[in-house]
Image (cartoon, rainbow, N blue to C red; front, side, top):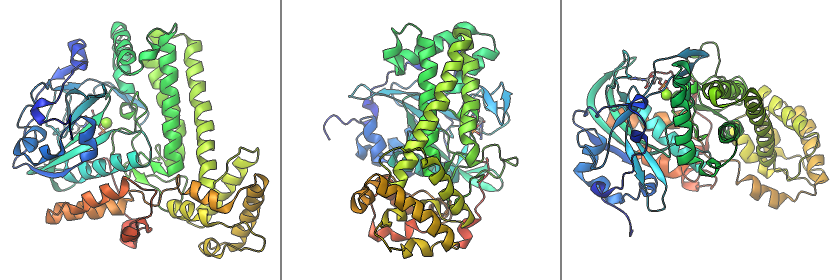
Length: 492
Ligand code: AMP
Ligand code: MG
């Protein structure tokens, strides 16, 4: 534990507030009433060199419940705008989150400490600046689950709860979540200065992002083009990973797109239970703009928003080239990930058809996405083997047989060995994902009984989603009937 620090010794290096005042508004958190620690994540604490015992001190709840200022912090709400559901909205910014400051850890990495639900800011518009415990638990668990799955994401340090009433569809209680990320700069952070015609600020922000997060580009000849290209590649890889694991973000507005290609802003997200390509996880998304199968195209749309935001620094050719990068990287990475899910080592021309055939069959048979891919590692090639276990999970057994014959042939063609393939597949097809109903159980216990133990149980389980944990067998099950109808909206 050497090198781990106390709260008051955290090493701040607040780079963002050294940008002009136009980039943010200085504001302090508004404390919650009767704060208490709901949950704490030692993995995230390690990222900022924070000693895990610090969570036991009353000052911890003070600092992350908004009543105590951390020495060295310089709290601000960040300015941004963005395209929401396809339309430009000029007035956004951190309306309920406050960047407390940036911590430089002993490895030299910088982490934003972002306090979500911290109260009113100049960007709150008509809202209350708060977050409820329910949505804070969802974000906390999902960001850690995504990290466990190897998907780039913001992280979560802790949740502080309270007895403060917060009005959503019904009365709930307010909470604050501490989110960590190397930066919270979003696509919308650039868009806002483009629409305000403050081109000097676009350049300043681009130079800041390059210096802080893409230092190797600093001396590149076309550094802004390279920056856009790099963001395009990261965004494409991120969305390919979402598609492969069956994650629907729910609100892919350009203000929720990280310039580092991290999963950012967990609202009405959902993992696929039964496979359905048009799955819409956000019940406020009545037109299905952010349906599962639209995510790659929405990523492209958002890249165009970012390119427009950076356009004063770029030629049209450079923009076109970055957009082409997005498409090419997405196509390649998605194909690579899906091949791995199928246990295929080599790339062959017919792979896309093999995959589409499977996805259609899964959709027609309402197969659980996670369970099916996990169990596919049990497929055996030997002649005459009917793979009964898998086969019986399909209603259309003939359909399965036809697909299985093609799959067997494809495996043979590359000399696949059953045991070896199974081991590889189990490293990419998770046993556990944060199904909505699992989060819901943790939320119910927390909100109704003040029992926070299920949050910690899930966090621990989901940090290693590829290893079977027999004592937690029930967590890999498809949802019970009540858990199939959970509707999640934007209200958080
Ligand atoms: P989101 O849908 O969470 O990405 O939020 C979109 C915008 O609304 C951002 O500018 C948020 O800061 C703001 N916002 C969301 N909820 C609240 C709230 N309860 N109070 C103030 N601002 C909010
Ligand atoms: Mg947001």
